[in-house]
Image (cartoon, rainbow, N blue to C red):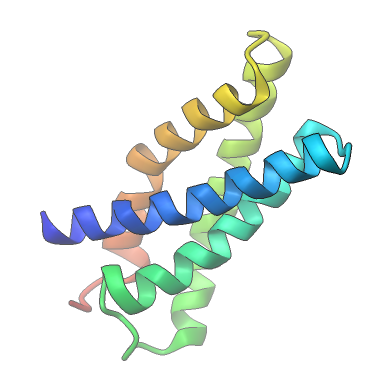
Length: 126
């Protein structure tokens, strides 16, 4: 349970960075919502990897290249799921882009990210 809580704190920090990036790109820089949302996901993913590696899963003793490679493949699935959900909520459900980002990222975080990080990316290191 402690690892789950720490991983979710890491996800919240990364998600905040993701949302701030997306908001700045859309509202202050005038970027299109979909690429800005994807860029936010990239920024959040990098931050999440390092927080999870060093703190949530205490996996800094593992080989960073090996973990990074596994994280990248897991994260690529995360990116596709987030981009698809974001696109569908904005374009077909007519939901505000920030609400679409919240709904999508929470769903993907709980159903996809945590299980794969625990059982695949940072497996057997705790």
